[in-house]
Length: 64
Image (cartoon, rainbow, N blue to C red; front, side, top):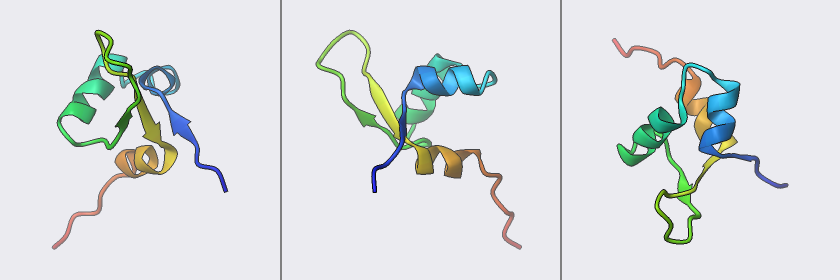
């Protein structure tokens, strides 16, 4: 079974409230897991697993 991945641009196009720069910031802060597939260019190229994006977008239940 193959996994689905998104780029920061894919996410920003599908979720207008999340700009590419905001997604990169979430990744750098460790809030959204991603893999850098860049080849040492100016800006990293990230791939985000669909499962990780879904988990990030799902509201968390408050623990009492």
